[in-house]
Image (cartoon, rainbow, N blue to C red; front, side, top):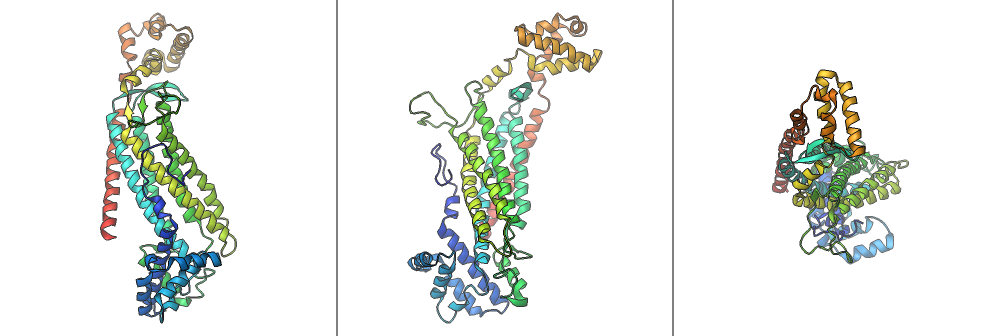
Length: 461
């Protein structure tokens, strides 16, 4: 699904596809080759002039693309033709110092982390935008009454603002997870063919640290080519973000159904819902999000499989983690961009919410009646009394308020006015409004921090 933008909406590609194009990955690998040469020059392994020459030529637009592609077709190797062409472009006497002591995975895995780091920046930007939109919804719906539902049934009155408040709370934890995991995920690998530093000698760890520093990362403590837990952790976090986004979309999808009609995702003028049913206003964006969420979550088991690498290196694992990351990253970009569009354009229908809230004829307020009646007769006795009235109201269609009023066990303690007041759903929404506004404040703070981090990164890039 993620190979092309789904046709469901006018939502722009946030740029993840461009990051994962082969040409961009090649450039990232060339950036690592330049950083490696610089690190080796710093430790006296190669001439400083060689590192400078390599850095000058490590640009894909300066290389012969035809030679590279012919080399790939001939060798079937992941990076050798690119290394050959870089060495040729550098020329004598320094071309022979390209890729000194490194193995393919050292370069490709570290380079792909440069790509992943840019993807993370885009994801955090989109999450920040989603949080701002959630904050708007939480504030707008803070005191907008709606039926709270458990197990698909009316439970207690709530306000719409409680829903985005819960979304905010969950999404903020994902932001925290992404930040906490970053130092574990973005680690440069350099250890040579079997991760032993044999080709670097005692200088190996220092070269690895210098390489990592040149790339703004940390170095792997043990540069084993079979360690994939950090890359799997990244995809697991994406799976969590996907699960939350899917849950939000499915909730909106449900509330948008004709029988509910409480919200509607943005439906721009001219959008066609069906080729044969002109009236259709389908939840296309939400359906996209639900499907993309499933695609991201499906990558998690594949990432775990990549951790089953054999001995000191196993190309199977590299292929698995690369496929899992690429597919999940593109799906993440599509999903989050759609989530932002839905949240920003979500239309709320408070009249329909209130109409639905009153569908049960006051039964949704049974707990409030029970607790008030429980003060003089005890909670369990009150539960039994209200239970009988509620079940009869449901099965017979008689008004709940009338059944309560004619029961002497109730009327002895609660008059008609008291019953009417207790059946007012707006008097029993708890702390929904407070929680909604507090969550909105937290969302705005987090979104501001993300925006500031983006500005700081851009200014130092």
